[in-house]
Amino acid sequence: MAETASPASVSYRVSVADPVGPGELHYIRDAVVRVAGEQITDLVPIERYRGDDDLVELDGILTPGLVDVHCHWVQHHVRGQFRSDLLDWLQNHIWPEERALGCHETAVAHARRFFADTVTAGTTLGMAYSSAHTAALQPAFEAAIGDWLIGNVIMPTGGPDELCRASVATSDEVAALIERYGISHYPITPRFALNCDTGLLDELGRLAQAYGAWVQTHLAESAREIEAVAEAFPQAQDYTDVYDRAGLLTPRSVLGHCIHLSEREYRCLARRGSWIAHCPSSNEALDSGRMDLAAVRRHGIPFALGSDVAAGPSHSMLHVMQRFLHQHRIAGEAVTATEALYRATAAGAQCLGRGGRAGRLAPGHRADFVLMPGPAPADTAEAWLNELVSGTAAELETRPQGTWIGGKRRV
Image 1 (spheres, helix red, strand yellow):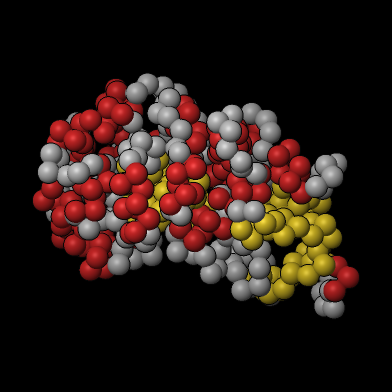
Image 2: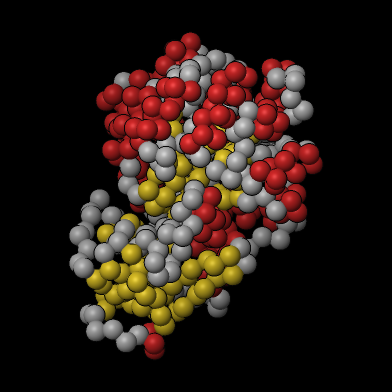
């Protein structure tokens, strides 16, 4: 992987595809993108360019850097290898793999491989689950390429003894990690409700409120999970209410999956302003079900896309976009490739609190962008995007032709 130092300023002549919203793509076939330091300072059609920089011509189409709002970096090495019901998958395949992250050398090797692969695939920003081992956090932050939020899963109960013993078990321990890694990069991460008791969830909720912290967890991924949560938390109205009672639902909460929700739960998430991390490739791989996109839209709940590696078989957000389009189109939902790109870029940046500085190709934003193949023979940008996300997962993982982060080319 090559990292090139960027000069004080550089201007690129290239086609640009910038998703302004779920239904609006700003496409310029011949544009100039000017970068100064780490920021984009100008983006204009070639006929309006008045600078005196030597133009660097790029053969392709620039998009914003891709954003993954839900993944497990510690599972990357077994992505797509196991398929079963969620709870069986965790117990029989994933938790045994995560035990190895207690070894420093293993954590370093896995972290370096994950971040090398994700930047090659065009991901420049994301939120990731680490293992229960607090010692695995440092190798992840040291290996991270781009802007990442990373939290150790909190699971002092409901899992294998070795992982439960490795987990933090009090809010004081979590507060120390927030102080160490910073509020903008360390999310409070109860793995899911079954791994924490009511007392600990309440502690974590108070901590989240006190710090204004990010929260990531899982919600309503499988029917068996929901049944188990109802049995473990009989005082709650439903799964969503478990988190809501604890104060864990805020605009900085990112909830993975949200497949099997009631109308009451949709209304609750909408009131709290919480985000859904929509993981279509994972939902498909574990046969968990399809997120009710119509209901999410009807209630105005914000959502962005996540790979959910390793249940998701690929770390490529292009592959996630492909599965988003396929899964909802066959269900009769009106989805476009423009929306898929938006959910994997600008929406993801907004979800992670970076909306004003990432996820778009716009002046004032960080110069995080990806060079995609093109221009395509397709007549429209929408057709080009559909073509861009066609192919196998392996093909999509290496489809980007270059990734820049903060103005520097990283691959």
